[in-house]
Length: 184
Image 1 (cartoon, rainbow, N blue to C red):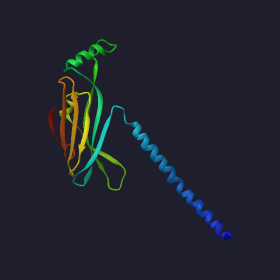
Image 2: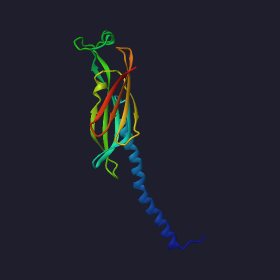
Image 3: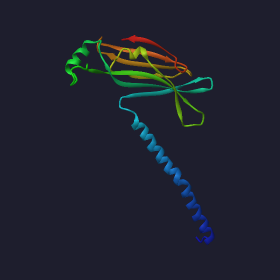
Image 4: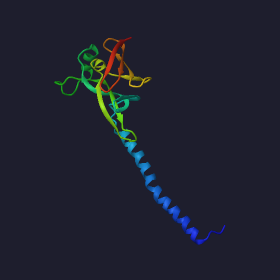
């Protein structure tokens, strides 16, 4: 197939121009992947579980719900198991009490501006009814069947009482929730 030399130049120049235009896009997509990976890697190991779902709105602001489990160390004073643990896992400094693993649960309201990728945490609330129990683990399940309402089931095991624990939390507008305790 014979292509006139002027047309060959035009085809070549289009290919070069296309390559130059696509290079930043391709580079940007690999950067975006690296950024996402960096974000995932930046989450501390003390956050073993995150759930996001549902939708909420409050006036002109709206977004999604997020539940977060954070593991921290806490002075444990209320169970016989803790006393045994202090004897077994005492620290090198005998004046410091031993610490126990403590799971805490938080609900966050995250807003998304229309058409923008940036999200903003509007409100973070500690689930006091669960966190005060100072349990070692927390497991989450989320139900988001209705707009402006998220139901979170937090379950754990209380070693001191040898019972399974569950707390149901219903979150609505930013900062507002109701909790009901349950023991199995």
